[in-house]
Image 1 (cartoon, rainbow, N blue to C red):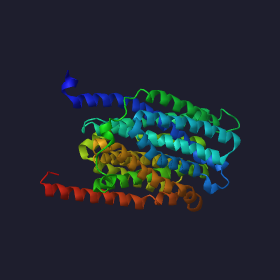
Image 2: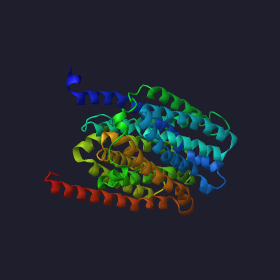
Image 3: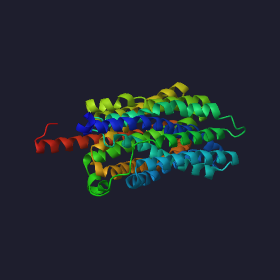
Image 4: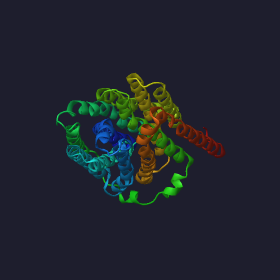
Length: 408
């Protein structure tokens, strides 16, 4: 009776049930990407015809991320999010199989093809955070987003440990069995996602709403997109280069796996409280803290090349990404109406991962030609741009509220 008389409470109850499933799926999907990032540059360095191409498989992963965002939105809009989830996890399983074959036969091109499908799976995984907020009340949405992202904490443990346990199991093909295990993880995620309550959108939701261009011109959307791009692209730039940089500095694969593991834990661990912080202090403040933390991580990276410098820098980088990216995602939710959500969310992710793909291709060359310190120095200008976009959006919002006679 309470749910029948309180539609908002019923919607939040449904959202909570989905959040539990999506959080586990986030952990499994994050484990798949963790395997790629922990091994991609190292495998690339053994298969690539040139050392400067070692991180290309990771860049192709990002291209897959960017390429998958708009199709994910279109599939979700036409057939429902659950169908999009199934397609994505299928791509993740295909990634593992192709990568294992590529390592066994020494094919750099096939390995890049595999990471492309891994990126497509990653694009679908990124939509879990928005799916968790579908139909939820305005008060619960930031918490739904952050709780799903919190599932990534377990990815930080599962992914690198999966590599550690399996990397030598298919001798002499280092990491080949790790990708076989990745396939199994993706299939488990597929089975779980089949139980998510995400029906096909109603016919009324497929039409109407404002044009995408009008929504994208909002200062708040512009700030959200820029900050999402900066927080994710700068994190990806440093994280992509770190395993190979650690190898160049004479550190072991175990050191690299340990750093990536705790980086991923730091990326998702704060999500248990990020939604509460956003509700308390506002998304712009949380985003600003995240961008500042990424700058601190770059300073740590410049200051030394010991294992501890890499580990601490990667942890701080992960914390910064969480506040920056989750906060930017919450800002996006403030810019669209329910019937506009799929196209707006897909467009936002296309911008984030499209720009990240452009920058990702240069990471290996920057590391190979200019070194680890330069990789970290590249972080500072984009962060200043992100902070500037936040300030401008806040100024415009206050001006609009003052003109409308509304409180800040």
